[in-house]
Length: 266
Image 1: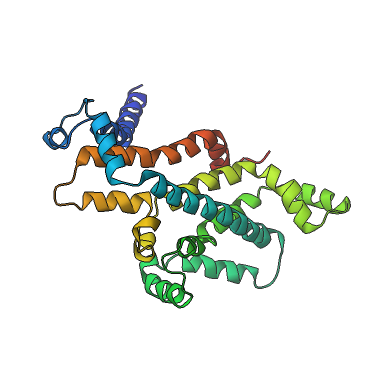
Image 2: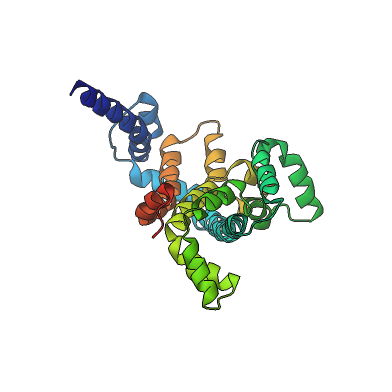
């Protein structure tokens, strides 16, 4: 009984530490900058003022379109390419398959900071700097997502693939009409992970997106915080808006997300 009580206490503390930043963010969006600095921890009456200030200083439709376009296109391309790679690594056997896959996993140990200069030079020579393509292309072949799909594909019933081959389906038809429906939970979990990664991407867009009309919401919020006297209420209002798309995606796919992370195949 004491052990169960201790578990509940620890879980309650963990839940509080996880939820409090979101609570503070929503509370701060309704308070003035002075009230936030004083540590006011309850809702205030400055929500409309913060909203008006934010929309006056920021071209919100433009930056949300930029972020949404990059996140959606990058997510779609990453899921398509990485799932095909994961499927291929698991389904097609060869002598050098494991060596290639091991090399990919080894590349995960290279920090992105070590690749930024070569990437920038490459995109600069291709005249793609300050375009959405320069942000999207480096993300579409995600080694982690390839690994994730390969591990999930291990649970894919081989009998289904064999039966589809007997029925005369080609490999691309098996992938589209058999594999995709069965692995929908895996795709849902990967969608959440990849979308959140691309939506919150900061460092690489900061380097390659060099004009204001191409900036994303993360870059704009960072710029607002670097002001000499930042308006914290307005910034937190913008942060709440920036958080909403990821929350919507998560709540829409949360059931599938849990199934996908547990490796559920139906």
